[in-house]
Image 1 (tube, one colour):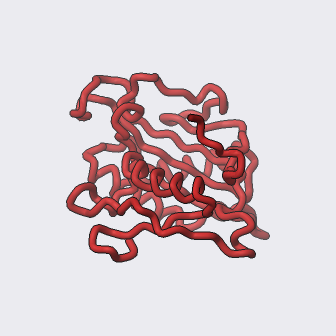
Image 2: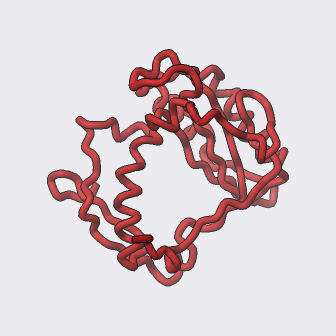
Image 3: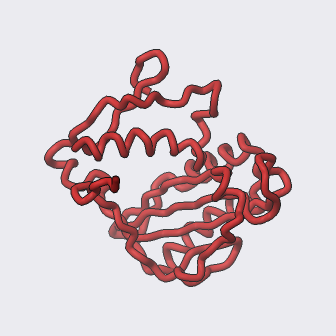
Length: 201
């Protein structure tokens, strides 16, 4: 039976012109990876979500250095050697904002294991980097003013001796997706997750 998602809130991606991929600005619709890339099958990627705000002095990227530091930390946890320096990736974030003529936007750098070998062992698969930026409004939309309907999820947050919670890794978010889907299909906006001991995670 098909799920009825007609009432589920949406966060559509507003297309921009370019995405930075492995050192080059690539037209939005040409920014693609191979279907057999390791990240697609095993979730072997790390990422950041960075806000850029419109100011009187031009676009201002919020705590860019801190975000890129965490990106490098997450990559280190998963033994992914990023083939660029922190400075190069910070400049690339600025470049993709400029190239797309954006001021108030969201920036998504992602480091992922690409096309190389298939199997759980990722060490022979290359490490690739991409950075996208697009206009994106408030995550909770009207809930910022009206409040959000929140459900305590039946799904528990993955604990730290199973996966490292301090790393912002792609695969970790399958846990969050289950909680989010349960919430929105039940008529809520968000899910509140507890840890295995029943504390807010």
